[in-house]
Length: 227
Image (cartoon, rainbow, N blue to C red):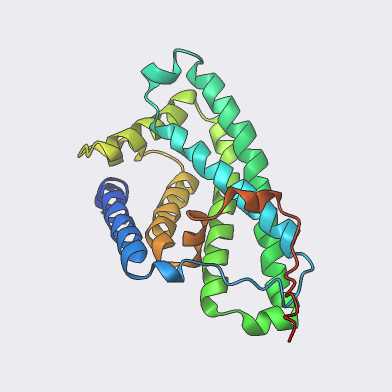
């Protein structure tokens, strides 16, 4: 039973998640592209939103791109660094940006809970996706100690697993069958979030202007029309 569950979660489930993700992404852009937005609560209460939001966005984007390095084959990155060096860089940057995202999300959650106006305007969906991301970030940060102390081969196996997934290899799950539970929970929850992504407000991150990160706020002024 354990072998079957491992095989399903880490061989077949990633492909299911990818299929749902791309279906949702394409249909959202074609059918409901005008709904791609994150309803701002800044007008309801400015306190805490700017700092928390930027910590979250900076952290989560850099963590996401950091995870993409798992798809680099060893023969590619070995031209410039060893697997041990790559693990050290991943641990350092992953911890820094992971903590940034985690703190940012906690600040945003606290604001939604403690500010009456924001709480009234928040939906179950707002809390649900935020809690999922907080748990996912917590699992990722919890795995740092395991990654740092485990043999480097275990870290390398994660990359080989990711590469087998995108090349549709039937034995992908076997590569991480013996890995720590925290890794498996982190991967499974990550895939669930990946599936939900196109159907949530997180979609706005794909079309978010880069200038967002450099703005400090703005004021709309309407010019009075002379009669």
